[in-house]
Length: 238
Image 1 (tube, helix red, strand yellow):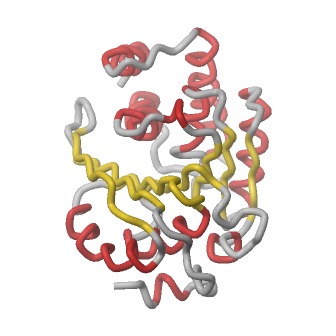
Image 2 (tube, one colour; image 1 turned 45 degrees about the vertical axis):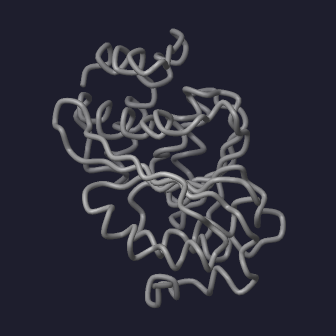
């Protein structure tokens, strides 16, 4: 997907970007490729693939959820900033918090935010299980989201404790999301969530499968969750 095709596909879906925003995506690509030579941020470095599989894929969450109506987002395990920083470029009003367990990625994200002149972004070097226990962050975000970090029952335990009541947990998934959804129903219920929507679509051009799963936070998460680091992965709520 070339940059002009990226722009056209967004316009088709009602997302009109200004020149400044398009320039930010271009600079994002340049900084990502430059830093990737020194540290392993992504296996995808071809420009057209970055625009399709990182930028467009990240922004696709906005085709199924109205980000104009929310203010605070926490992104768990964002790696090189996906999906929250492409969404931040498209929706500058968003206040974005990224949590990642690798400090080198946090260093990259700080440098990237400065290069892109992004305000209203915060980066934390932490495990999601630990972060979700902190009073200043627990149940304080409009949206918690993650893209391809872990299976859905595990992801629910990492994300739902951070979502305020009536807020939303968004999981961005590839093929096989239906199976994960069946596995995760108990986790949603235990953690105070309720499935709102599961939308399937295909990425343009390569036609690979994607799913956007939205879960409404209807009850507070019990204090015992998230459990200590590593436990959600070893003993998921199923």
